[in-house]
Structure formats: structure tokens, C-alpha cells
Image (cartoon, rainbow, N blue to C red; front, side, top):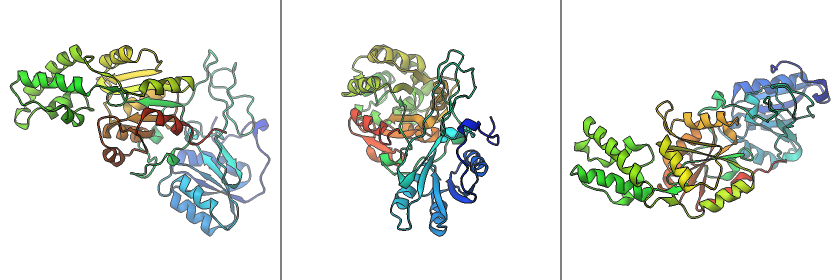
Length: 402
């Protein structure tokens, strides 16, 4: 159903007084157009803003604006910051709404909550069964039925290209308050996040270097060699004078053989990971894994070291999909699982992971028990940092569901 089509009569709210002004602060033109079309049909006068600074200026200069629909992730002042300023206004209450990103795929969906005096709520999605695929029926006011499969299973939204690379918060802003809403899925990096594989990686590469008659590296040096695939690991471990293409190619082959035989010598899940995975499983949170380790080996590691937990998707490096920090792999998982990227919390331990999460439009969380430092994670877009795995659970609920 197109954004310009009238909603079902049973779902249409009462007509608002003519010319009542509503601020629509949304930087994505597809979402903004969908919202504006509905507001005009319902008798409102939408006031558009594509960033937080313009939105706040409009609220300050036009006291007749009584409702603000805020996208949490707009550039400039974030939706949260505008909301906080509104709550401190002396000019009187302004109803606050949130424009969730699901509206991009279905611009007609009124997937947003309008609430009074700044109390934020997440929109409800009515999950019916028995409808034909793609049919919308029986909606409650302010709710939308998701597309159903022929088996009656609820499906979510595919990955939305409009949101690739859009800013989720200001760089270096480390606060769970920038989370747009409850997260339904956790996407994990593998090495340095779920399992401590540093010693096996370092020992395998050092054996390759030793056979080549090249200098070895201490284990801790490999914290900055790993994370971007075996070829990059080999290039970083080789001395500059030995980085000829034929030497790199030979060492990559040797490293693949060496590591395939020794990846499980000392590699184990980090302390607290089992408890975290148990907690997420008990709460019904979906989990997935994305690694730059070769795909077959990634699956083998997960099957061997994490056999007690179900992951909705496990993916490693493949020739047909660009490696992290390209967001292609993360967006592919979002599409396969039928969820919008904005529903994901991405937990990783390197700059590569933070860049991947931000480029995919996922909430980026840095694991301080992994391979890299807090400063590196923050500089590359981490929106929260965890000291121990179980600190992840409160982040999932920071903005409660209504």
C-alpha cells in the first residue's frame, strides 16, 4: 500500500483540528514523506526538519507547534537531546513522538508513538496469524500488522539501503541513551569477542615465520595484526622487506594449513560468555555471528566451542561477500533474519567491528576484554563499552517497550 493511500477506516484516528502543527524531524526523505502524507490527510500541518538543530530552532521560534515526531538518529542534536531540551522548556508541554526506521520499508505504517509530556513509548506491532502473505487486516489504532509467510510465521523488514552509512550518533559519544529502542537481536564478532583465540593465531603465524627464517613477534603484538582476515594478518606479520606478492601468497597458504591444525590448542570462550549466552537465550533474544575468519572455519569454531547455544546465523569470510568493515555481511544477516538493521546490537572488539556496525546502521558496542583499547573503539564509533559480558543485558532494555 502506498504512502498516499488512505488507511483502513477502522484504523484511522479521529480528525485533528485543522492546522494543528506537528514537527517531523527526520533526515530520511522516504520516512519524512510517508509521515507527512498521513499528517496532512488527518488534518495536521507538518513542519519539516532534517536535523536536530533545525528541529530545536523550529520549536523555539514557533510556540504553536504542539507535537514533535523525532527520529532518534537525526544529525546534529540527536532525538534524545531534543527531547531532553523539550522537557526543560518553560513554555509548556510538547507531546513527543518517535519516528522509527521501520517506516522506511513501509512508509504507510504508522509505526510511531505519540505520547504526552515527553514520555516515550515504542510503537506496538499487532502480530496476527492466518492472513495471506502481505495482507494487512484487523489493525488496531496506531498499529501495523507485519507481513506473514504462507506458514503463518511473522516476518520482519528486510535490510533497507536507505539507512546504510547513516549516522547513529555523534562520533565519540559513548552513552546507551543514544539507543533508539529495545534491541531484538545481538550480532557478535567471534575472535576477541566470544572466544580468546590470540595465542593460537600468534603461535601459528610465528611457526610460519620461523620456517621462512623471519623474525617472530610476541603474542601481544598480534592484537593489532588480527581482525581483518588471514591475508592482512600475514602482511602485517611479515617484515616490510619480505612483503613481495609471492612471499605473501606462500605464507597465506602455510598459515591456513598451520592454523587449521592448531586453532583449538588454547582457544576457549572468554570468562562470562557462557553466562551471557544463557541470559540472552532465556530472554528469547536472537543471536548471530559474523567473522572475518574463513566461513568454514568460523562454523567449525562455533560448533566446537559454543555448541550449547542456538545462533540464527553464523557467517565467516566468503569470496562473494565483502569482508568487514564493509557492512555487506551484516546487512545480509539482517535481511536473512527479516529484521531491520536498527534492531541489532553489534558487539565486537576492534575498530573493524565498530566501523561495520555504524556503516550497517546497527548499535555499536565495544568489548573491552578483547584485542583493542577503549580509545580505539571510541574513535571508531563505539556507542557503548562493556567491561564484562553480562553488562550487555541492561543495554538491551535501556528504552523499555510499551
